[in-house]
Length: 169
Image: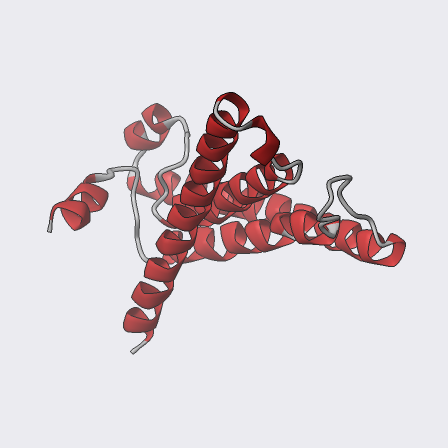
């Protein structure tokens, strides 16, 4: 049951990342075409939306990367270490990741609260509330912390063959 829920959430997460990329690409292509074909159809809010969806996509992908332990790290020392030292190094790394993500999540919440309190908005005609943009930090960091823990508990290793197997099945 829990595994099915996690798989469903992973599919939603993957879809959200893809949607963010597709929206950014579509708007960027529209703006390039509008610039040369019909300059009167350009919109001033496109850059705001492009930046927002790219940042949201990156932050969502951070959690996914942490779950699969596909982030950049020095595997040379980890793979050369005996099993007990490897477990200790993995545990210490997890503590640092969770502490850092927790601190960034907390500070992100403060920034979101401040943006709401001051009613910060973008300068485009849409006047998009900036708290929506800032919210990606606490959401992304909470996801990175939670999925780092899940990745370690699930026994993910730096061998990424499981990613390719899942993609090819």
